[in-house]
Image (tube, rainbow, N blue to C red; front, side, top):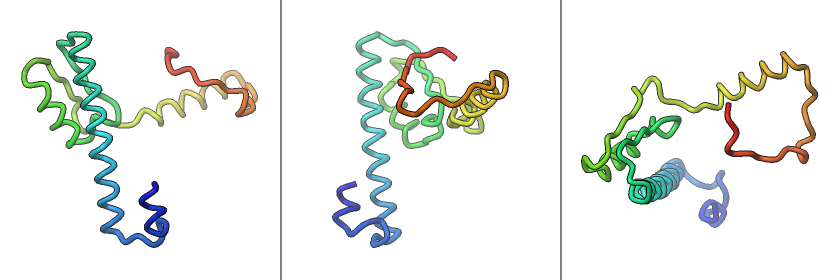
Length: 119
């Protein structure tokens, strides 16, 4: 973000530079995901790893995860056409819940995040 600002803002950056910035972000995100995956495999002595959700569609991430597994872990990836972001499912579930219960939307500042809720 600082780089974009320092280059004069998004409107001042050419398409090649935008692509380079996006690639560097993707590389950094994948590096972080791989590092944390390695740590989890070691800490919990994981024998099977399922990579799913939106990130499982990323071929670069797949290659990096395959490199670190080195046959120490059974890897499972969904078919490419089955990968995707769950936000659509969450949105539909929320809409159907609203229709069924006719509850008013809470005020945004009254909502608390709970990352471990079950669906």
